[in-house]
Image (cartoon, rainbow, N blue to C red; front, side, top):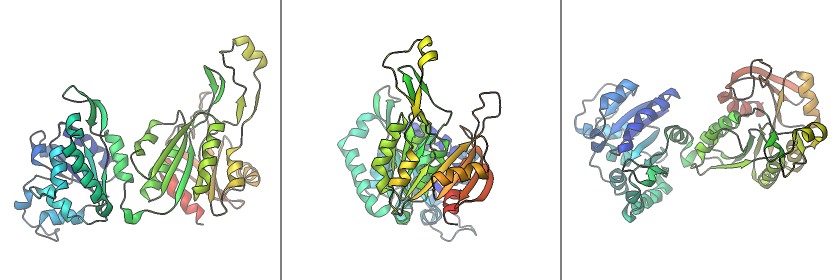
Amino acid sequence: MNILLAVSGSIACYKSFDLLRSLLKEGHCVRVVLTKGALNFLKPEMFTYLGAEKVYGPLDDFNLEKTDEMNSKVLHVELANWLEKLVIYPASANTISNLAFGRCEDLLGGIFLAKKEHKPTIIFPAMNTLMYRHPITKENLDLLSRIDKTNDTFICPPISGELVCKENGEGKVQEVEVAKDLIETTIAKSRLLSKKILITTGATIAPIDPVRYVTNPSSGKTGYQLAKKYLSLGFDVTVVAGQNALKELDHFIENPRYNLVRVRTTRDMLKEVEALLKTCNLYVSSAAISDLEFEASSEKLKKAKLANSLSFTQSPDVLKFVLENKSPSTKVVGFAAETLVNFQTLNEKWMRKKVDLLVGTKVHSGSDGSTQKGFNVDQCEYTFFKDGKVTNEVTMNKSFLPEKILEELQR
């Protein structure tokens, strides 16, 4: 993806180096535009050394010599045509004011106005708390938000914390990895799909007493990759995640098409799924749901009681509930996490729960010294099972799984 990274004169501008590296690591092509304020803090050469394809200053519109690869002699038009997303990180109060009133005092102002409507602008404000809360700044942000209705402009609010001025409050620019995920999943309104995906991920727990519970090593990495890809494809995504699932699931919270619900137990997960099921077009059951539960004690149990009287029952079957209560048009993807994945194992599960697609995943916690598989790793062995047949067997990174699922469903 062609990303134009604009950096303005906020003290947080040094974080743009890390954002550039993070975007490049994901394979994006990045060019950089600096405002006059940014040049007071940063040297343009740093972006070049870190891998930016090109770096431009605020007045380069007037210093341009046409090259063979250019279609226009006007740099702000050339860059506006080249970019797929315009990212302003960080955005100072001055830059926000200039954009809100359409000022073309520098290269960034011209690009912002020349950019086509279907190319999103993603703005990450950063400033002192009082500056951010000032009525004029709020009015400028509100004006940009109204522009959003026609120009695909997305404003990510700053976070709270200790600022460089030693005050605590709103104004810190969004963290780099969160910004990167929001950039990748924010898309033009014209690309949005009127379809909703419900994903369960991570592990649920089975409490024994106030200090003990039974669970498994599932991290929620699969759910993170599913949510990220499906948001970037234009779907509305809701994730119901175990309480200990990885924190990266929180990265998308500012995306208006994303909803995250964290739960503790299998019954908690069932309650949330029941409330959300009727509105989804696709249900992906990637959670490692605890299939047993205890009559949890309200006080810590002594060791002797644990050894002599710890009994359990079967917890509710969330996937079975989904299959019995879903709308006829809702597609269901089930997961089979097994130490032995073969036709017999998958067919037996599919005969009991006839999902549209069953994804067999070879797993092992590594608790006996064996290699950990499936849980909390990036590379997995998958077997895809559909209509009583194995359709594919592949070892791949979890990041490729979301599109593979859609591909298998369409077979």
